[in-house]
Length: 114
Image: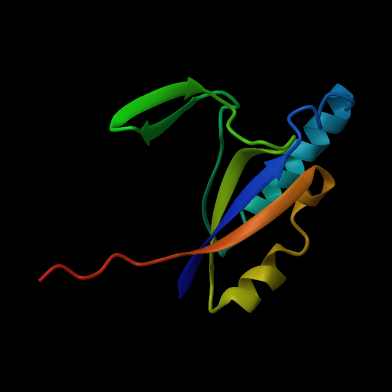
């Protein structure tokens, strides 16, 4: 089976208006989704980091987040599916849609070493 990466993007302030009870229920929804048999991994990402880019033969390092938009990459899920259509179908009820968007990308297998 192929593996697909679900990239979770959202406005970092999306949780600001939730009560502690609503936050707890939302976390429980993510955990329940993570425990589905086709999910092979997931993690939340820290909202800050560094962006490294090469310009004029020098590597520059700047603070993040790095997006030009209000949405930032906040986490990911890795899932198994027979093809992209099945990956989309399996993602349709993901709880993250309450907060932002999900980009689905196939994880390409490493070539076999000779």
